[in-house]
Image 1 (cartoon, rainbow, N blue to C red):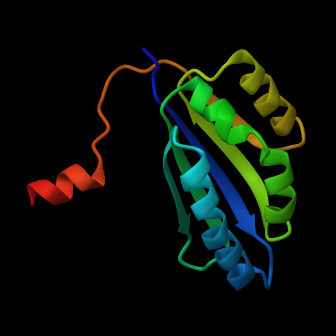
Image 2 (cartoon, rainbow, N blue to C red; image 1 turned 180 degrees about the vertical axis):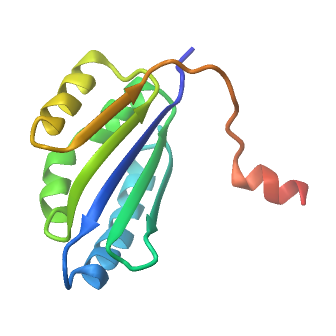
Amino acid sequence: MAEPIVFISRNRIKAGKVDDFRNHYRDSIPPVEADKPGTLLQLAYESEDSSEVTIIRLFSGAEAMDIHLQGASDRSKRTYEFIEPVSIEVYGRPNPSTIELMKKIAGSGISLSVDPQLIGGFVRSLESVRQAE
């Protein structure tokens, strides 16, 4: 059974690019939601002073993460007009080729941490919570 993977990227928002980034990010969501069903969650949180954004993704497993990363290079080029990556955190066990890709990214000065061992837990959908309320 596939174990979920959490991927967290922390990024600096470039000066004068906050509104452009917000618009770009919002526009990027519908295609990911439609085309990447194994991406179970994608949320972005902006710091109080709008200088940083943290993007959190939850994948159903290693294959779903690989599918999500297909085309990421092209998507990132546009995104990096607005933000600069600072760090990447991975929780779970991506495929070895994905780990190698993450190490290459980290080699460019971006901090990388990987915690592979899932101890346990659960994922609950917001829909199920809303139905229970």
